View 1 (cartoon, helix red, strand yellow):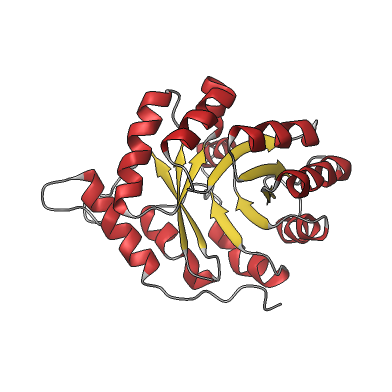
View 2 (view 1 turned 120 degrees about the horizontal axis):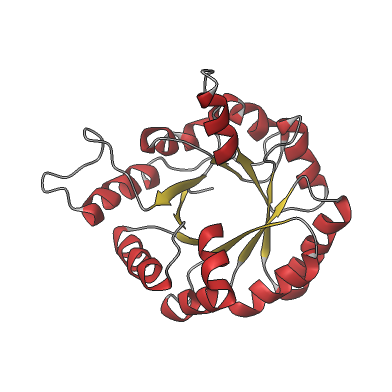
Length: 235
């Protein structure tokens, strides 16, 4: 599978999200993600606006669904989303409902293993229930809380290879990755690379001489796309 660059629009204003999305698409990003903050702020209206502005572009709705799975997936699909996210910690029936809605309305389902006691088993369980992709995810609050206690902050890279080896579906790693780490995800067998927005570009990493954000993002996309095919499903 060719690497896919996804930008997470974790913004709270649709105009800013549209502007950032346009910049990202010019730079070579493949997928747009309607981040959870944007969904909370703008709801279906935000999804529709992004779909109108970017027809034909894959649009991930990061719902983090825990219940009412069929209706949530149906609503997002009808608003223009092509992918929806359900949590592994939801009841199995909720995950099954989202998967069924995905089949009924033509959207792909991404299963998120955040806060699973066994992250590898959680990923396999999501695949077994019919998810099309696995998101291997260390949560924001978890990372910050552990770091505040003076302990090493956990990273999705810690178990990324094990997750990739456990499933046959494409894997995405999310949670506190630096740009350098995100760019290396294909090396771990995870072809779906997520970049956060607003983007933070390290001083000596992929910054153009004039500090132009679009040019910097273009360099990042070129590096990821140059990786070549990432083997998927070779358990």
